[in-house]
Image 1 (tube, helix red, strand yellow):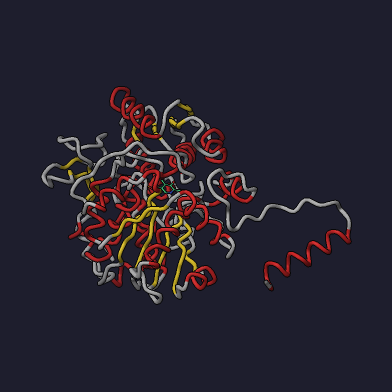
Image 2 (tube, rainbow, N blue to C red; image 1 turned 135 degrees about the vertical axis):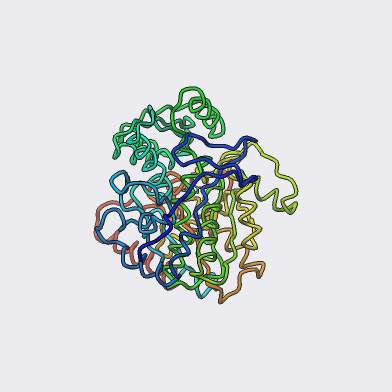
Length: 449
Ligand SMILES: *Cc1c(COP(=O)(O)O)cnc(C)c1O
């Protein structure tokens, strides 16, 4: 399927389609200070039928034909067509498992609940999907002689882990700004191990964001936060992949946690392309889950998005979404309007209980996934989600990156509530009779009671 019209993509202002820039330009916002988006030449992509694209994606997935085996680069023409294959920096991200959460669904009264486990990725979160694209574009630009001294980001933990890994693989210096004491040890150790220049600053995420914007404006380091719309291009494959995994059938609901709101924008952008290129003919509904402690989108939703007011985010176990002034709010609101969207919130207790209840059925959830699970449960309770609906919860990170809150929960070291599913290890003398009595008692209690 040779294309007569070359595949092309460029940056474009969200508010004025005549304001365009090449992807090789170092630019993050339009003249009015709004976000840019990457726009594709859809006429070029339409030279192929929906079936041709489906077959092409299917042929490439998980093979070793560089770089197309990656879940992101298997869709290269839709993502970043202009980058040379040898400049792609990939660790075969994407193609993560989507599985039927049969027992958890049954316990909630849902027949068709699925989990998209984006945390099963190189650095343990979906951030890899966007970072492979951004770092590849930077490598392409450097190969063309553009002077980029380093790539940099502010992070609540997962963005910096992904940036550090991909930059290290490409031999490009990485600088990360983290809020001191506010991210997990697993998240901190990732950029440290990958050799990034790591700053732990006495501020929150929003404060780190201000610093990185300043060094990118004044010192020419390349900004890798999601205000850089290249990341959205990689992250948008999540929705495409979910539908591909359902053999191109569209689920009824996709539930996703939101902080800076790049990911929900990306989800919708991927779905938009599927619709426009005819691979699907209907839309799922989207629900964004927010922590009550960091809920500016939820508050705006309560007012039909007529106003959006940034807030000072309070502390939450869902540390990656502890963001009060989300950069992609306009894109996200737009996405929710297109996908008949809903926003829900979850308290700290609800987040932890949802994680723990689902963990009991064999899952191992990060707290952000807990936010989505709690949101899903509320929609189910309100009758918005029906018993027979096919529901996908996007699990955004691997639970092993967030063990502290689970430990506090199971060892019952929480101030505000008594956990329902606490399961602390049983400490006992190493004597057969004692162990046996307790073991039989526990089996009875848990599975026969
Ligand atoms: C970044 C992140 C989110 C939030 O994504 P946004 O694009 O900021 O809304 C959710 N969960 C995890 C684990 C993350 O790392």
